[in-house]
Length: 142
Image (tube, rainbow, N blue to C red; front, side):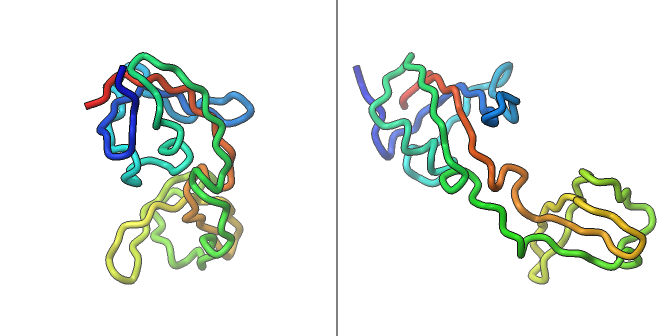
């Protein structure tokens, strides 16, 4: 049978969990995820796990945070004056907001702390600093 190699377009079904077993993403009920192996379209730890697999193979892959979404970067957290945020924007911890960088790029942020004077926003990826596990099934090599 044909084995996956760098440059192949593949399709996988997957379930991604944290090490405590809680699921953060899954392709269940959706089309499989399709991408080019080795192209940087997915997290590095998952990309390197695919070469050598054959259609129908299942694999469980544990990926450290450095090979997933990276470590938490404290510089990606910023406290902003509360009066700098429009009154109609909800400021509850966990709320996802969209900020704009100086060059006009949209940047998702999460409200992580609120007090009378400031709102602390975190632009780290929600899975930054977390070790992950993926249960993958190779469904196609194109």
